[in-house]
Image 1: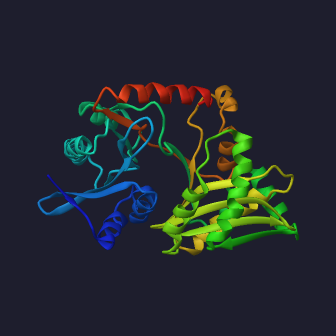
Image 2: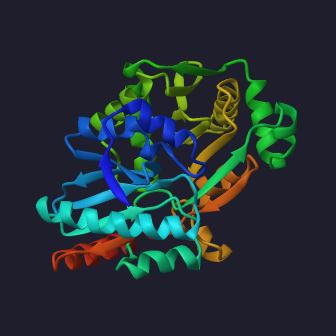
Length: 344
């Protein structure tokens, strides 16, 4: 198997369009976004007998605790059979070890979109990976099939969710605005900061949010949704529409008795249908089966909200790390401590 760097956006996106398991974190635009943040990016293709079997976006992440190579929701593979996955993972590991050495990275981190099962975990284990201390991106996502008509989608929702959507529709002072103006990220950020105070998490910077939105909006792949009641903004979402999937990636809201967030999500779903998306990805939910533990989880309320729209969960293999230096272990213990402090 050979690895070649891919420098053509059309070739990259065309290949991924043929793959079933994917998220926008392996899109060409996500790579451009990372470059806008000052990160170093590589895009590799895996070939056998001149046939492209997989692609992989790799980012060098520079952090105070040490640099590492990161593969978000990749590699993306055309045929997910055992032989292909094994060959690609082995080849990838050897190639990225070389890059990591040149770039002085202490470990390689992969957040794969491979099904969470013993078989896939074994493949990573065989080439030296171990489960990371924290998740890097959504490992348990909530998805909704939106090929049904609107009435069918409403009927499959939780009764309370359906009621709150209709209550929002009947409120003459509640308006859902769709925007592709970068200035409206400021409005989103105002709500986002309130959400940060409420849920006590580390926020993305305004620069990060603007660069992320701009990277997708330039190709008409992103919209800011704003729920406005009279002169007050109550909820907002930055949604990415890519390759037939809508992604609820960034969200924010303030505490209110008005069901703005419910109506906003319904308008997002309808927009995704207009764009011929077949799936709406609500992104991450709490990865806990025990109901008592779930109630104490920081994402408990958000998970309940997302599940109320109907759909199904998809569990990906947990984030994997390949240690390459002793410098990895202080990072691991630091992340374990941070995870404990956040209540995860």
